[in-house]
Image (cartoon, rainbow, N blue to C red; front, side, top):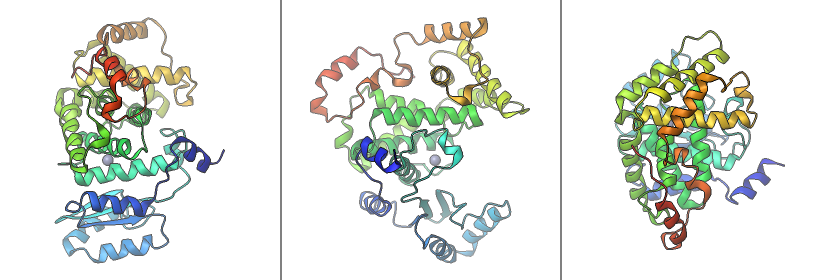
Length: 348
Ligand SMILES: [Zn+2]
């Protein structure tokens, strides 16, 4: 089946870079007035990037040049960052408009090659860095804000349902134990969206309300809200590197230790338990990334028992809430809202 057919079957929606820019400028006129949007698929992309560079002040150009010294040339389409803040309100925003192939390292995290969803998500995530309050900082909080923002935009536009939220979470969680990427862990915010304990009507949110909810989720659920957990996870994932496979096993083992010893209401416990639960499921589904990992034996049994005990009555990973994957307008939520009240929301 071609990518095109898959995309059409899943949502029927196609990603259109120019339309996305138009919507962003309409919904956030103030925040985007100094933003240069460039479609990396456009034949003029390289020329547009040079023009952007030429329009910068010498001080701003110096920042670009300093990155060139580290062999990262921000001003070529191949190496351009997705969103880049030049200072004084000037930002460069780049994304693909119609890229139809995934890079090899992206396939692990988005195994279903739905490029429309992928491109839509990337665009909205980077827009989140511009429009969510304090979203342009290199920390976990800003990634929570951007991912929450992207999902909310997708819920409203019909690009995403709750299962897409779980897919993004799976990708982020996997990056953490696979590549020790702590900054992009955002599953706790996305689970809270899926569980939606306040029963927010996502469809009727205004763009500004969307950015506000994203900021609130980031403040509440990011690791910056629980620095003890942040440091603990960083230590658990930053393992001595003998081989990639060994490092991944070490990281999963360390997360097992956190699942056993961390307080059940801490961010570190939630993340460790969630990652191990999904990794276990992935292993059962034959994910080759977990080929050398064994989740059996006495040590692991203690981990599973601890997770079971500490998550009793909680919807770890929002899988119960996602059993009804559709995002429905408020008036149609009667049956499922009754069902939802029997599920204890995230305890953080
Ligand atoms: Zn980001």
